[in-house]
Length: 487
Image (cartoon, rainbow, N blue to C red; front, side, top):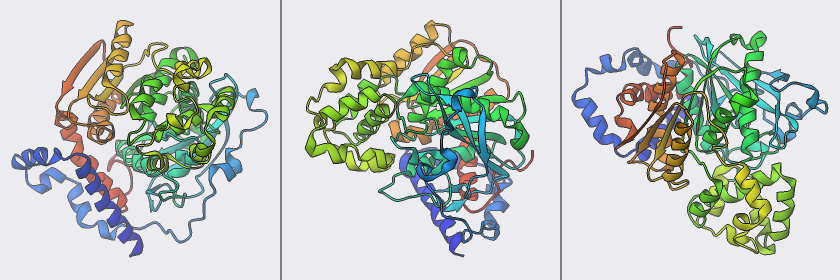
């Protein structure tokens, strides 16, 4: 009963969070309800499941082991001879030590899950290794694979999704993985399509947030590793592959799309959906400093310093003594903890020269090296962005899309007028899923289209997906097996 109570509380919390993130849902729901069929017709197979949710089997949580963070887990250790392996080579694999679990406490009923340590390449061109989580739903189509990139946004390996997705990981405000935990709901929505979902720890073993070349290469090598895992995952040798990411996850996804023609030309990726894009790191620093999202700044600067030793030395020389302890705290905590600690603070003022990252040649070089737009994706791209985005201006995404299109890319670009950076992750998810489903089903696209909509939830495809997404999320938290009812 305790486990069921936890599931019920979490279900209500999810429903409340969605309602809070999208107040305009009230009007949309009213319109849908007014014209709707009886509940049985609307809910279909979900109606009897809702009635019997309380009787669904509950995963035994008592016997689940305590979980070591990646920094203390030998599985994550990069082998000394890693450079001898080709990118995408599987170095070791295992079942996750603990169950994949919503919010760290609600085990998810999957057909199977795997963790894979695989070889990749960092932003300096050096061989390294990171971990891929492979999630397989019931009635899976093993010929369809979605690579989902989480907005981890952290400067420590201990925030990696391979860890934060598991039961018993360190939680609470001092750790701050709630955003990653919440993104598991979007992953579950993809699993309900019958797709295998792979989630790379694309920040690598050092927590190199904003080292975007590493992020893109780790994402592509994660796809390679998944394809190489057929002997134990069952993934087909030539699957249809798509990618999806929002905010920090969009950085890894778009960098992977830009790098694919040169770094992984043998990979055939059908398309990528990206939201909350951040083309220019420097602009974001200026926008969020002294604002609610100021915690992104130290996490990003320290993440880059984790990859570029010369930047680390530069910071060490310029962080003011009275701010040193606080400034370096993101190396031991995750996104939400950073946002809480630095909210509305003058982070650049913690340096003896507040303009350092905009003017010092070394800092400017590192930041420019990690901007989007160095090459053009060859795969179709769906981009969605709030016109009122408070983390990165919509004008920069407008310009990036124009650049891609001028170079011959295929881009569908949706600008959303009734959202902000945080809410669009939820509001546009049904549209992104619809686009990914069409792409998985071999819909051919060519050319570019840009549109501005009042709300992404008014898209017919979104209205089709939204009720099922919400119902499935609640049922999964209540103990439903993850995956389509019929294969």
